[in-house]
Length: 149
Length: 137
Image: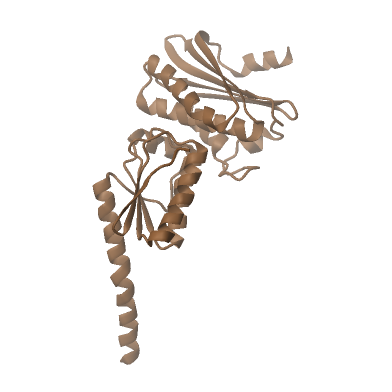
């Protein structure tokens, strides 16, 4: 109940036109997932630059999910808000969660061996970005890329 | 196991990435390339990414690693053929690929490598000669 209210507060109300989900458990799932996202983005007529940004963002998040959350579930949705169409991606894992989201969103911060660009970089690539995490329970990241956004 | 072929052409190693790289494949390429530089004594590495539609932070890091590793093995790395959308995305992501030489296409990349080696080679000798003549004077 609590989480539900939070979600509606931080994300824009949209209409879901089409949805698809995909389980990510191993590294080899990443490429098919990216291709699936590309399929949907092409279907709504998203331009090449925005497509590339969206797929790169998806790639970052799916990699995070595998590395830190031990894999999880992804949701690909075609959404619309007014006249604007877009793709919404949701990544949920049941990993250890992120203790300090504020820190995790900072450029250059990492608990792993990466460059620490993943989350803040991803946020720059998409139109909307929302992250929820509870230590011990998992992390859910939601992004939207509008067709012309 | 899939592998990305590394071609040897004179002093150079050529790599054309034509598949979507997953992590293991990219890591193998990194290791293979450094091995090949050592084995062949190559002076330059040319990586063609014109068929790559996505470069995320992991791939970017691998490219940077290859360049830096080759550098300390005395070989220059040039990345060629980056798609415009990939360049835009990389910069927004915050990955400017510093330290990696780039060229628009394979031809320009080869030229860049040749010049780099020419400049590096004789110039160093030239410096030594200068020093030698300086001390002689």
